[in-house]
Image (cartoon, rainbow, N blue to C red; front, side, top):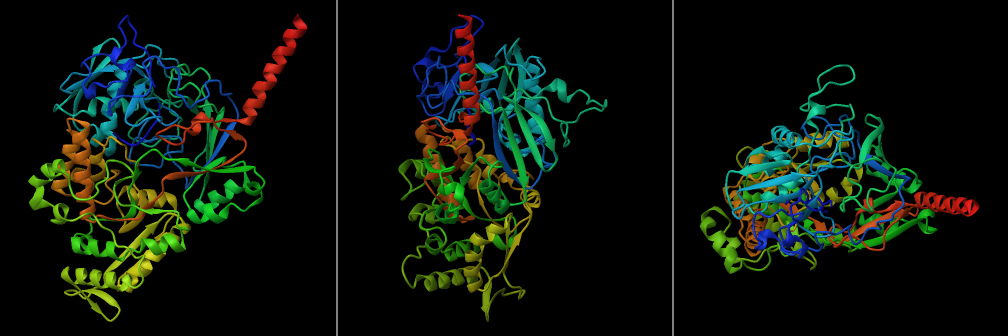
Length: 640
């Protein structure tokens, strides 16, 4: 299940009883009676909310509506179509999930992992062998033009998304067809049985308006979803596109007659009258915009230096800006110096291992990060999915058939990382790294590490998208140069960075992977499968092409129980780590949040997502509501 989260459930209709098991907090995936209509589905067994819940526990169902949320975005945009490879879509749109403009069939819950609730579809059901799933649409679900969302829209969206983007093609690889099986029912048939996740993640699909995309624009030109566009598309979600200046700003307007305001997934959320994004060229400019006020109302801080020392300006000192730390209930997904393993220079495992040995996390944490980070040690850190110690008995059963295809250390050694905390160990690690390079066919000539056959110096270009990236690239580059490697740091503008990453035009890049969930599944194909390695736009950034990893992904996808899923995920984690496709960096357990006091947050936060900014509201909206109540009371008194 992909790592996006969003939100809840509607009751069954057409005279059919709602799934009784949903009210008790059970899941068909863990033994429910199959083929019953359900308004909530979970991959983890019991779930938190009953079938008839009204809203998430952490929201204020009476939150005032209005005011403006100001956000910043980096770079620029040139398209309002996020479902294709070409173009840079505007902030607020999303390639996965609906973003602000569109709704999905079901919506992932921010309050618990691997759980989804009804939205466009009021219910779903699937057979015991997980060979298909049927979604029944809510008769009240409508597009912003008032037309109903139809089964034809769903089928057209499924076919187009798979055709247009490798992410969706990988996610729904095992979906053979989508067909209308009732007036408001659409059934997705799968090419294999036993994929426990697939019925649920069909609900993640963004539903698009077929009639709009197949129609013509104001000038009479035929629309084409396969091309970028700056015509605001028709949507179904809580916001629509208002004013915008291509590449500079975009304002989203709350849809007052949005069909879903009474759905539990929406109650107490999306309270802003407007959400405005203003574009800045880089992170430094965005930071200055936040400090100034009126351009960025909150920020999730990602700089330890700034968190420790940067909030010394007047607004932060006098209480206009509030700093707080919020527990993060999600997986700490891989953050790393990612190697482009498509390049010949990185295809020798000894080279990749040597590059891992040279990285001195402890010194960077001490000198740059104020000791606030911990070492990233897994693709699924801070969760039960992370591989630790030696493989368990069940892991060994999964790994044994692959013994000849994976590193021997997978079976014999605990996963380890160089520890530079002791004095004098740096020289030891450098010697070991040099020895590995020599085994790979390189030798040290003076202060240059060269290919023994060609005499060419080993070189690496580190890619970044912001001048501040040099701060975390340069220390590693300095240590690599000590080994005789020619390292060049290249900072490009955000749009060029996006384009280069989309086409895997890099050698090494420091980046955080797309968020992982506690129920990994089909999305792992887009992250690590061989088929995705050379597909532009996929999220297999490291270019992993490993038949053993492909088989481990299948073990995850077709796991028959939670225990099996955890074992398969840990097994894949081990192989990925021992192959040294990336150089793991760091993570932290809490979210660093700073926000201007124009915003009001509920007392509680979602257990899983940690933050849900759409459950907040503005003081201006609260004041307007209070004034309206006072005016109504005054009018009432006069009338009496």
